[in-house]
Length: 359
Image (cartoon, rainbow, N blue to C red):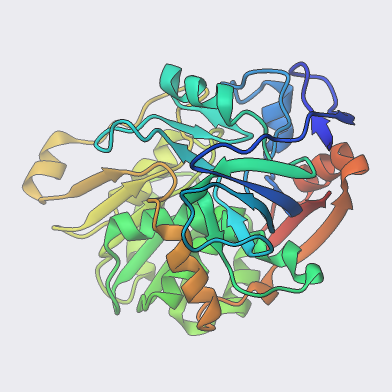
């Protein structure tokens, strides 16, 4: 099969051939119709993100495609089914603390690297081998719709945070990192899940105005000044009622002070979910005052990605019409132009923009 292969960090992807995947028990082979390109994939292949990846490797996290072959333990999947390929691969020999690898992107620790030895190649290829449970049926699709269904990968990340936050209908939630690709998707999801109001802070005034036009009166935008105390007050004042929960999804280059300002805007007995990248590349850690957490009974959760059932629940949200994939602006490249796709994604990281590769 043809694939875009990362042979060395800092080098362009090589468009070459890889052996076709070989099916085993508990596995599915999928013909890739479209694969999303993360806005920060350029930082991954350059080595800037310092992700754990065994090279050479065909990168690419997640895909939409059609099942080519299923193993003997598959009871519902059939050849020809359209599926979303969930890139979150979990070990099966410890249900309490499974090791994880993000297929085609990164591994969490040595256990994740061990998984990556087998589920090594990602979706920048004509075929992909995935665990059976990672093939999420999406119903009948036309080939031209495969690109927009790649938005599942963008939506699944903040959806995991919203599930961890236990967001309730009518609540007010603040999305820290709202002007980014994942943060803007989080706004759409929170509103679909019944949030009464979403507070959306950010520095880019034009992007904030675009979010206001898109979502209307249930969103309140806040232009950040960079002053921690002032920004916290601005966020609290923008809310029509006390902020019930905060979800932070800021990228690694954001300052920890921005996270702290957002988290500490939450009401007493409120919740905060941390799922961004702040501190991953060095810099100051997140310093939260012990007395404030304790006396205000604040609940703080960490959440990496989403639980295993989340993609199926997302498909149901989309099929019900609560989330419209049409709001994503899709730009597609063929596999021969994978490097150009990565450059395009890096240059167009804004809300509801999605770059895909169609092998």
